[in-house]
Length: 313
Image (cartoon, rainbow, N blue to C red; front, side):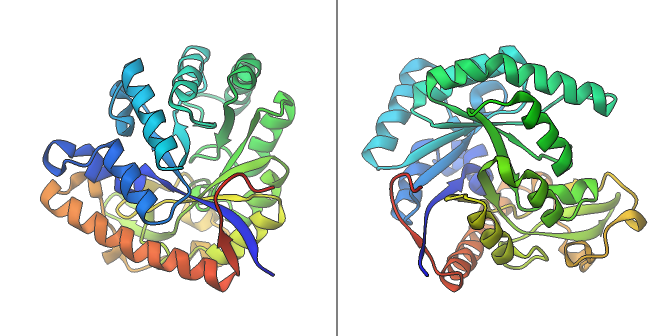
């Protein structure tokens, strides 16, 4: 049975091209044009921090230009922020609406006792839920190296608003020692958006890390995950090239589940992209993107998925 989906791509996939745009000439408009030419139906853009990162601009004129170009290319748009605090979320919902984005990703930036972080996150999301609905911007809370699936589900149950849902990342639960399928099962009733990527575990110079690798070359069951998400009602999938990303484990290696996602790989696969010279990082990133994109499309073909434009119910 053919399974129709929307297919997005994340700007993190080309983060070095965008970070070093003064030398690459690769800005948000070049990114959108390339991804439209590759057949993606939407683009996700990191807009974290000063300068709004990959959005490449901060003024209303720029937002209008991004919106116009996305419409011209027939691309749906999502933005990413971090920090659920009311001031940030209020601003970023406005930015997303101005750019024509239908979704805003966020995650908590709080530190302290888990119960306190959970309550502050609930309070924040309740406070912005109606504003998000009024703006037509879906807010999605990501399991981002912090909450387990059951904790994220607890938060969204308490928020209890149709415009605040979950973003499931294929591998982020590994950092907290949770099998990705366990996280998916707990989050399934709330998942509206996903980041599809691949990871391995390696022993790095400073301890064990979750290491991003080209899609299809890691230890995540990407097709099994995609199938479970589709069965749960997800119809928009976002490809994310996470080559040279790494994040430390937040639990002892001996506490990890005995599942395939937690098999340690060759330490030689360790890669810290932020430490590379741009002259090395940029071409290596493109090679990893191309390798992973081909593997991602092959996975979709194997699973009988068909990319279509427009919202798919």
